[in-house]
Image (cartoon, rainbow, N blue to C red; front, top):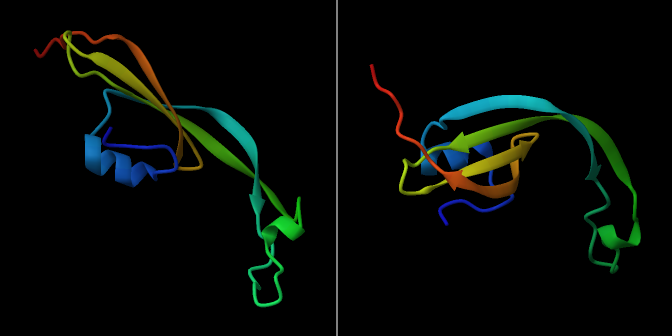
Length: 97
């Protein structure tokens, strides 16, 4: 509940701290809309579908372990933006040597 999709990685780390696991899991191509911003005459981005660029972005996975009595969370970022939040099984007690 502290984080929502479309948040930046830095905002998530500020809210949740350092993840238990962080790994880069690949790259994807994303379309970035760069349509016109001029609105005075009624022209908006929706008048120019597909107008933009395609970028390759890094996909990163964070897993947060909140201990054996709470469910773990898996967060997936594309290009530093949170795109998916999943609930995993119960966490585990970390061995602190």
